[in-house]
Length: 202
Ligand SMILES: C[S@@+](CC[C@H](N)C(=O)[O-])C[C@H]1O[C@@H](n2cnc3c(N)ncnc32)[C@H](O)[C@@H]1O
Image (cartoon, rainbow, N blue to C red; front, side, top):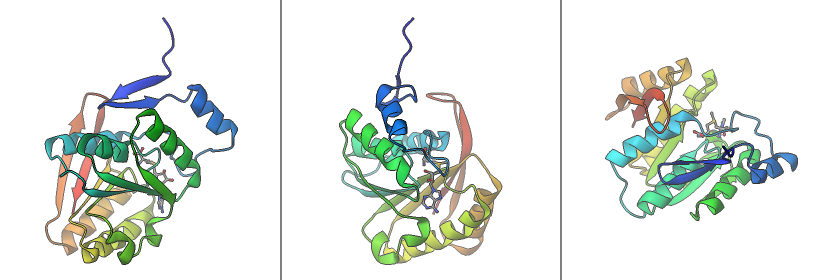
């Protein structure tokens, strides 16, 4: 049986590491430094949520810690959203652009960290999405402050998904204790991947 270099998930093509185009990027020195070396399962949890709660057409979406950007590309493809990604690691961005090309979907992206997202920058977006972006202790504080700036900026919803790591739990508890209208949803998936985790909606 031939070895496949890609998989199809939620209407998107995701290239495997052995795909020649992926190998070429690695050979060119684009090696992820902060865990952006694959598509993480939390992205699929947010996609599942958005299938049940679709975004309005042309929603301006910011994907934070976007990695390869499959979640953002899903929003652009499925709901015709205008999507921008940010990631602290510039090495992930060529993988995002490759997946945008392979899927014939447009998404812009740039290197920026959570703490570099000012209120004025966030005011350009309606919705913020982040999948598996709260894995170090300090990220709970950074993301809490980001959520507060986003609210001030008029962002209508922020969704962060996580398999349930302690920093995410700290973030979710802090949001629930200090902010209005916070929801925590447990989610389980068996297809397209087996995944379990939580969504924090603020
Ligand atoms: C576990 S990966 C998840 C990638 C993607 N969201 C997914 O679900 O496949 C975490 C991503 O967050 C990025 N990241 C880590 N710290 C960050 C920060 N302070 N600001 C922005 N991005 C950050 C990493 O470079 C990495 O791409």
